[in-house]
Image (cartoon, rainbow, N blue to C red):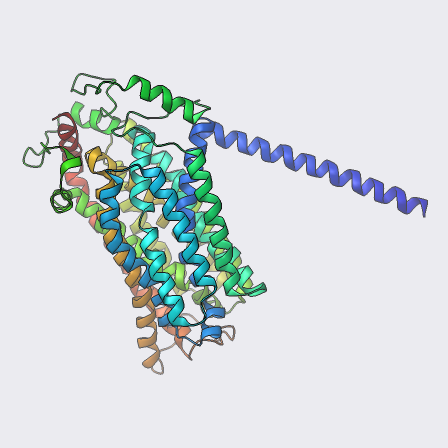
Length: 531
C-alpha cells in the first residue's frame, strides 16, 4: 500500500511537471507567433479577422459534416442538403451589394460586430428548426448577415496593414478561413455524431456571440486611406490609433515624390521605377465616396486585371465549395473507409492547406519587394494549375495510402492561391472603393459557391441514373457507410469531382491572362489616388 501511495504521488508530480512544460511550450509558441506578425496589436487584429472568416467557413463546412445525420433526421436527398448552402450564399450575394456601399461609408467595426450577433441568432434558429422548410428559412436569414464579412475584412486589412505586407498578412488571416473549414468538419462532425446535428449549430452560435464581443471591445475603427497602418512592435492598439488620429488633422499630401505618403506603396513604387504608364482612360478623377453603387460597379468591372482576378478566384472557390460539402461523403465511398478515418484525412488536408496559405503570402511579398509585382497574379495561377495536375491522380487512385499525399499537396496549392489574390485586388483598386470592389467580387464568388453544391449533387445524381454502364474510378468495394444515400450516389460523386476539377485549370488560365495587364492597372490606381 505505501508503494502505491508513492506511485500516485510520483504520477501526480509527473503530471504537474508535464502540464507546466506544456504551458511553457504554448507560451513560447504564442510568443513566436506574436513576434512573427509584428507584435501584440497586430496579432490581435489578425487573429480576430481570421476568426471572422473561420466562423463563416465553419458554417458551410458544418453542413457537409452533419450531412449524414441531417439527411437521416429530415429524410432529405443529397441535392436538398446542397440547397441549404446554396440558399444562404445566394441571399448573401444579393445583400453584399448594399453592404459594400455601407463598408465604404460607415464605421466598419460596429457593422461587422452587429452582423455577427445576427448571424449567431440565425444559427441558433437553425438548431431548433423542426422541419427542412424551417431550416431553409433560417439559412436565408443567415445568408443576409454573412455578406458583411468579406467587404469589411478587405477594407479594414487595407487600412491596418501596408501593401508591402498584405500578402503575408492575408496568409495569416486566410489561415483562419481554412481552420474554420477544419473546425466545421471535425468539431461539428464529432458533436453531431455524439449528440445531434442541432448541437453543432448551437456551438457555432455560441462562438459567434463571443467573437462579436471580442471585436467590439478589442479592435477600434481605423482611419481610411492607409493612415492607420500598424507599425511592428505596437503593443496597445487603442493608443496607437489615438496617436494616428491626433496626427491626421490635415489631409496627408500624396505625390510622386512623397516617399512617406501612405498610398505610395511597394507595388506602385515598383511599377513607377519600371516606367509603366497608367491607362489614363481609367484614371479615377472623382471622389469614390460620392460615387453611386452603379457607377462604382461599372468602374470596378472596367479594370481588366480585376475582372480576370474575380473570375479566377470565383472558379477556385467553386471547387472548394464542392469539397466543403461533399469531401466527407466522397472519401467514405471512394476509399471505402469509416467516417472517423475520413475526418482524419480531412484534418491532414486542412494542415496542408494552412501550410500552403502561410507560405504563398510570404513568397509573393518577397518577390514584390524585388520588383516582380506580377508575382501576386502568377503564383495563384501556378497554384491552381498545380492543384489540378495533382488532384487528377489523387482522384483516380482508389488506394488511400497512394492518394493521400497527392491530395494533401493539391489542397495546399488550392489554398495557397488566395493570399496573393486578395493582396493583388487591393493594389489595383483605389482605397475609397475597397469595400465595394470586394462586394463585387463576393457577388460572383458567392454565386459560384452557391451553385457548386447544386451542380456537384445534380451531376452526381445524373451519373447515378446512368451508373449501370459505368464502373467505379479505381477498383474498390462499395462503402457501406453511406447508407443514407441512394445507390450509386457515391459513384456519381467520384465522377462529378473528376469532371468539375476542370474549374481549377480554368481559374489558372484566367489569372495567366491577367498578368499582362496587372502592372498597368497598378499604375492606374496610383494615378487615381494622386488625382
